[in-house]
Image (tube, rainbow over all chains, first blue to last red; front, side, top):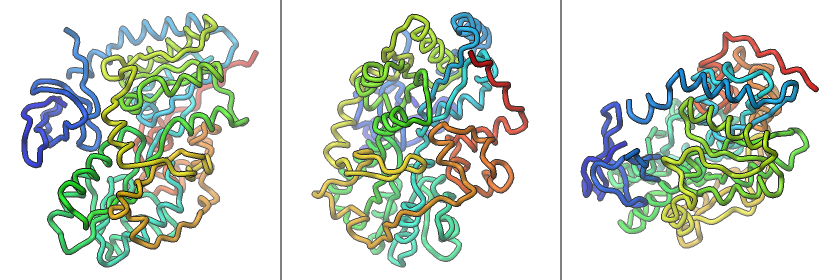
Length: 53
Length: 374
């Protein structure tokens, strides 16, 4: 999923999947900014995805 | 689609397949275990076995989190779910897993308040919205899912939400792999390491497999080219007489994993002395329970559960499938008495279960001819 906006309801971030589905995600375990891609399991981002330069 | 299309290039797949065939020793029978249920699903979905040379057999491991929960724990879940004050929440797959008294869906039909959620955070929201009810989340999964449970527990404590409890059934992958390696039932040549678990635990925990058992481990992603490259890297190690831990899934997996996620797990949970796995039996220090300081949120502390070991139905051979001893279609009830619509065993419930994956993607295909033995 890709981070759209941080600091949403309940401290969760808005993220969107490649097929356009949005979800509220806890980013507490990763250092990311809007635009970053993250691997999400059960509404928690567990890793930032490295994107080719 | 980004992160998908570039890993499904048919031409690259064919090239990898040719390279794998070129380094396979003719007549030798290679057994490679994919530990993770996600890999099992990908292998069947994309027909990866069909592009491998006949010398290579992919063996399906115990990495489907739904599959490894024993029937006794499902009985315990039902006992909690049927309490009138409880709203019992769980992932969708767990609702269909049979217990001795039917599934959680059956319990729901009998009047229990069982609700499907996508995450423990959803369950916590239900607790916030229903302060006069007790909300229990059936927490399952490997190290991939445990961080979500841990963060939710920390939120519950921070917000002072005390009508929320966890029925903790998180398991850890390394003791299960060790149990398989120690088992005399199976001779394996290498492992495709679990990609998403490794984003949390990193690469270090697998080193004993290469060092003490002399088996290669390649942590791999879940797209067809990821899996094929994982197989290629294992075959290359075998051809060169090496046994190392390699990382194919570099876009997500770091050497050190995610220390913050491991810290969240360690802060809230600790290892159980022992835990029963379906098929593998009791394995020491292979599962997590809540730390004593979180007893207030621990469903096992709050509610009496039967806590009895229950044998699988006689006809079900999930245990052998989970150990990689038999293939799904070798089970007596596969595709007849046991189907995804009416599962007898857990391997037919979850999409990550080997039986469901094979049933959904390959049930009409014939078994491959076994490779000639040397």
